[in-house]
Length: 219
Image (cartoon, rainbow, N blue to C red):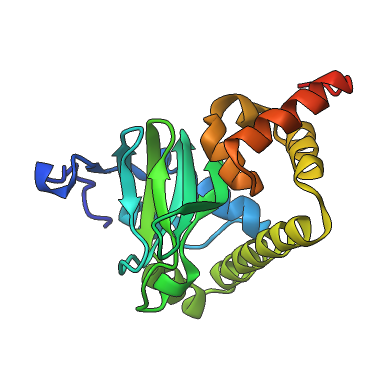
């Protein structure tokens, strides 16, 4: 019989982050994983029991670059930025993650260190689970193996698409594409973060946004 799900909270020493156990029937991660796999997953209750609910305040850091952090996250609510820091302490946003998406540092999943930092732009509710559990499930069951394989392909496709945009498109073209594909993000992300995400300065973004408005592009 499955062990009774218990609630537990992290201490204030952990930076104020609240960590809570959730009930299997409330698990958004399982629903997302089944969508990724394209099929029902075996022993879903065992995995759902290992998922923890995490609340992160706006501006708070979830984990930092070079930190050991072998977890996979699913966003229930809110918006986060995944960032690199150079030696001068300058921040470059590699991606933005919102509701219904998942993320992890691939380099940290296999006993390594995170290659980027993650912080909350908005107050967030996240589900997290250890990647080692997903590996164990994938080793034992074809449905979980399919899910992990498809999830890794999604990671690879995101990275490939991001690289293509920076190598083949201007900053203005990237901004127009963001307006077309994810207009809700433009309204939610602070201008300095949006500029970093697009690879320009805030002043440069203001000029781009003005040209786009003057061209009649819907914003």
